[in-house]
Length: 441
Image (cartoon, rainbow, N blue to C red):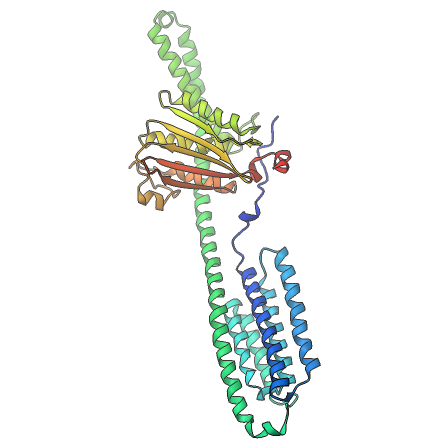
């Protein structure tokens, strides 16, 4: 059974893009609105019943109810979406400005000491919004505050409070100042952290774009070299075939053995070139095969043992049932690169350990070589970082990391406690397993 080379990558929920600062900031605005709703209810009840200041309770309680409905709608949106747009954040802040304006209008207008709460909305807008949107929040807050200076419902004060109005205003101003300070520190600190995480994510994306451009250039060079090397290798195969039929060579067992070794080397080179062309999507008449994990790994180990005779390689499989997968040539090449890297690092034996969990296939390559230096571990997967001191080294691990990353997986490297190194590939079944096996899992 053959499958087309081009396959659509399916992402797991845990692999969704990390650029969700807007979503996290909207969640913080929802939290802030819940705090505002609770604060309004407590303040209204204390002022109306405890301080004997008669407020329009029905009208003032409608605003927290509308804000609660707004929060419920926002939470429903947050559950369905991975990110929130800039316009939605702007409208959410504008709603809070209008809700605050309504409450101030019903409770004394500009004479209310809580007028300064407009500054919280302006400060949040300065962190979350673009320049034009921030000035929109500033303009809306300024216009609402100006309107409240002449259009508002006066407070209905009892006779015993008439002489203490200024004292009440001072106390309310102090409470408002403390609220602003606490809210700004708590929420703006978290929002700034969200924005920093977004900037870090964008920086990683830019770095990945640079690395992938580097891979594209290398792929073009490799593909071109593979095409150019095909002709001389074919000529070598023809010449070696002719040599095997020459009487003077057939009569010498040593020469026959050497010719056979050269033919094996030519076949190995042709196999490598075929793999390069398949990875580039240029192979004709060949496609990734549907197979099981054990057969796929054992075929990699068998081919590597044939290419590197004398190097012990053991394949260990955990006690699991493995689904059928698409045997992508790039995965074969990635694992082969790790085996070659272990041999070149001075290892005298290599272990390939395979296991799985509900979502991931784990392939670990463990050796007893000299291991990774601390600098190599810190720069693992970056191009031209190699412990072999060879010009152009380090590209093998660089390609492994990027191939696995493109498949939605990850690569981890570490040193063993008793020496040697281990590189662990984590590949998601969401991109490897066939549809029928994926549903079974």
